Length: 180
Image 1: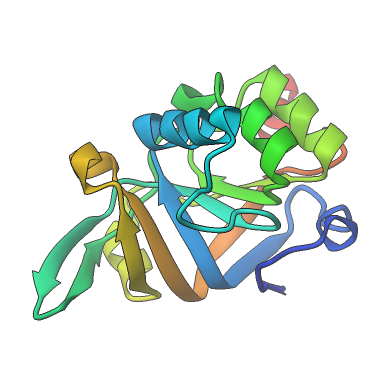
Image 2: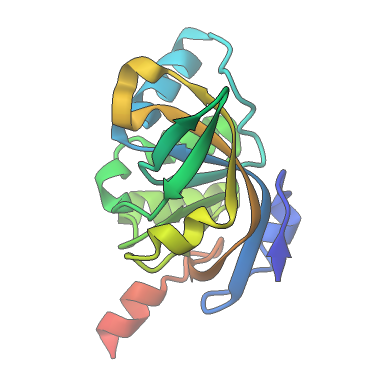
């Protein structure tokens, strides 16, 4: 199945753990400090440089290089999402983000926020950064002062395969595997 942001809650709630999906459209790459700054802006009522409602966050610190006036993505592998568990529930609540791409899973608080607000966690295999880069084009970059944690906006073309690891009903593929 191909997901095309902006995503609507009704469609996201149809996804089940184990579903394989691809994303085509806008994807916003963030890391710890990026998420923290997004929340600073939201809490202060400041306008974000990108629209996140219905969006897809990618927990990723991409490797890019400047080419002329633009950027080329060299590698864009997932980073461990668990580190961002403290800020993610509030992002899901206040910005209606519908999907997060990453690796390693999320905390119980994030899973509850995903269930409550209609979002999914899409697992990407670590080590696939060069492959993922082939499916991403840089649209824009913000907050360069954050260096490797700048906010990157990509246009994705069939980014994946991605596995629905946590669905919008609280089901968690990681937990299911642990219990077996």
